[in-house]
Length: 218
Image 1: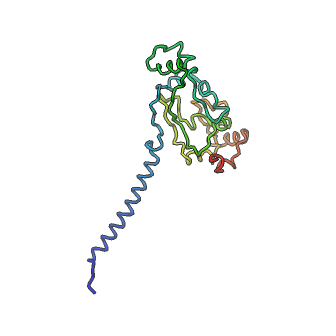
Image 2: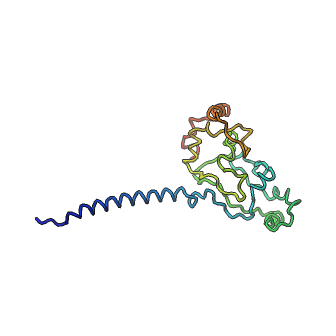
Image 3: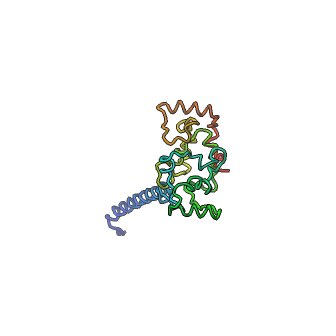
């Protein structure tokens, strides 16, 4: 029986097979890169807000503590968004005619809250409690990034499950003394692992439960 395909067809099949494998790998790499990119995670992407609030100015420049605006961060699952009255406690005295603050003045007059866009958020199927993290020694910077350096607030971390699990699997690497939770400039000591284990014990962190699915998915 005569040969149907020329001998070169074997080489062509090998080339095509290699191209398919390489193409699949390339597409996988591209898909992974896209999945981890700011386009999807929105990390480091500032959102346009009703007022261009600057943490850089208020926190680093003026030294305002996180809790002045986010009043329930130590006692509630939600850190709290400051009411217009909080803004006006200062801005009824300074920058009273600034054009950019007109929405704040209008909100105060009409008693209609400002509509801020949520920057840091997790899916509805994820339960997150600010107070438990703060009271166990997780600093604001750990999750929100260097907020005091943000002229416009953006998402400091991906807040993906894999990122969260880094801390849940080894909390001793991330915990800090309670007095330093709101300190934007705090740096871990050289013996963080040892000090962290002390904090795990002293703060009654139940490490064996941190990777249980029901901790975050309820």
